[in-house]
Image (cartoon, rainbow, N blue to C red; front, side, top):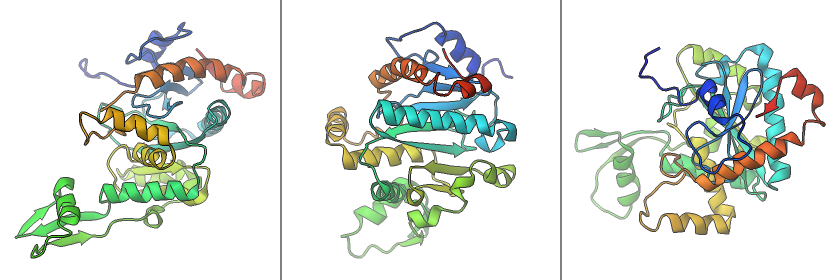
Length: 304
C-alpha cells in the first residue's frame, strides 16, 4: 500500500486512539470509536446533525457490504438490531440505516460503511417518502442533460438554472433530456434482500444505494446513481419537515452563508453531537450486555 495513503476508516488506528477513553472532550479523526465485534467496528460520524449518528464499518478492507462473507451476516444483522433498539429507547427517536455501496466517497471513505441515523419520533411513511422525493428533485435525479443553443449542459447548476430559474422566462428555447425520478422509480431491487442481492451488480463494477426505514413503502434499494450522501440529505429533509427546533438551529448556522448545505458532513462536523454520542453510547450499549449475553459472546461484541 502506498505509504502516503491514509485509511480514513482504519480499524487499527481507531482502536489505538479510542481504547481506554471513558469520555472524550473533542472529536478527533480517530478517537470516536465506540465498540467492535469480530468483523465490524462502530464510530460516531462527522456531520452529526441529529443525535446518535453512528457508522458501522467492516474491519476487512472491502468497498461494499455486498462483499461481506455470508457467515458474517448474522453478526451484522444482530448489531443493526442492537443499535436501532438502543437509539429507539435511549433517544426517544426512530432510526434509519443506509449505505452507498461501492461509492468512492469524498474524503477517502472507500471502506464499506453503514450509516445509522436517528430521526424524529413522529417520522412516518409519508414524511420519509416526501423527503426522498424532495431529495430526488433537488438533485434532478433522472435528468441526463439540458440541450440549449447546440450545447449539452450536464452540470447540476446549469440544469437547475433552466428547470427552476427559467420557469417564468419566455422565449427560452431549451430541451430537458430525461425525467426526474420519483420514489416509485428507485425500487429496482428487493430492499429486504440487501446486501447479497446487490452482488451480481457489484461484480460488474456497479454501485447501489440502500435505504431502510421502519416502513416498507419508504425504504428502497436502487442501482441509480445519485452521487454521495443521498441518505444523509433525505434524513436532513425529513428532520426539517418535522422538527421546529432543528430548523431554528440550521437557520442560525446558515446566517453567514444561506447556501451552505449542512447535510454534507464536510461542511459542518456538529462536534457537540459527536462527543455526546460517543460518551452516551458507550454507557447505553453496556446496558444490553445481560439481555443479549449470548450474542455479545458469540460475536465478541465489546464496548471499548
